[in-house]
Length: 214
Image 1: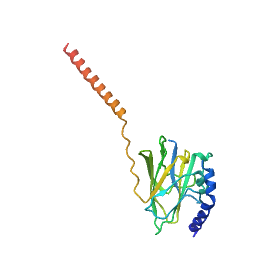
Image 2: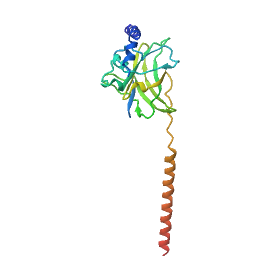
Image 3: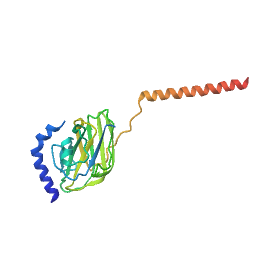
Image 4: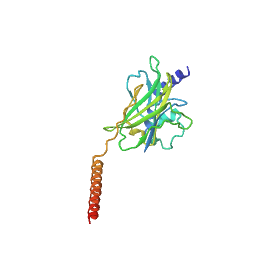
């Protein structure tokens, strides 16, 4: 009953606070999935009804403030959140969340699973990295968001407006992060160094042989 009252409250706020949220919108950053003490709403809120469908996700500072995330930076242009509600029908636990975004090229990032102040992380494991083509991925797993539970996606470090084209999927395997291929010039330079070393040692052996004969 407590969770249902929260959801009805959030739906009411969603209708009433949308204009206000737009007015306040605005390594390098971190992305986490937190279990908040309270959930209220703004445009960055997702009600997960069908776990097989992808979800459009955006981040903003007002969602963090309304969700009660502790220890927020003083500059709202350096953090953002999205609130997730598990209202799957039929009821189903959510055991993983995968996120993809564009617009983050050039930034370094991580995806920790530790606590933020007194707020704990829902998932114990994570992986994140670049997928190439301007897209980055964040996977959180080894945990449970139960039916009628709520979670917060929390980013800190850069302007949340940089997170473009956000998509979330749940109850899917972690996104495979490709291993970066070595830079071609680095490979070429390494090859030259190895050839120079081989030439040096060959020449040293030749000089030593000549000296021995003398």
